[in-house]
Image 1: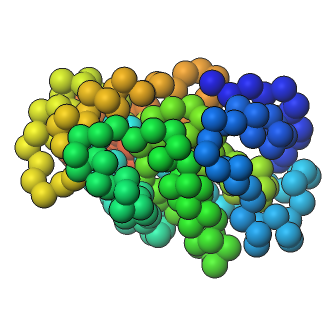
Image 2: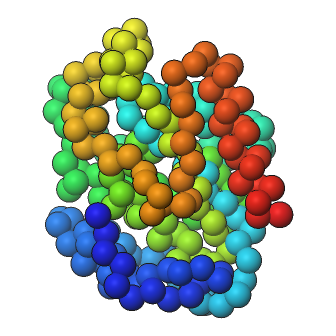
Length: 231
């Protein structure tokens, strides 16, 4: 879990220095794990009272929870660009998962950075928000995406955690066809999973044990509640 030792104020909220974040992910094979996208860091202050008016909606959870289905629906409802994280995995990661080999932290760092920077690029190009899928199983993975709000005080990051039992997701994944993420990967993802707790207030949970229609309604309701609270 990340250690937040040096809080600073951003958008009226407690943020934390990049140094603390870098220390927490020092196990990464890449020293650029928390580096800022050039366009974001060069033109915007890191502190101040600017209110966030652009949003990253990250739909997260283990394999089989329905991330793509929920994210596509929210993208349509919110009329925002959709980013499918699976499409940004390097070939080496896809090969490992296709052979039921769990990804390591080192496998994921550059992928997470690419997802963050792609999201920020879309916002810099004029989108008011993006809807992103990403398993983001561990707290430190979610923190990599949160850094977007540190570098650009206009950006607010929200996580929609799709929650389900391992048994339910094993059944769903077993039914999928032509997908590199097989049922054997579900167990490894649950082994890595760190469910968000009360210390991650930017995360809301959605129970995905119901029908697709029920799950989509729950996700929409959560997003609407967040929007209402920020208006």
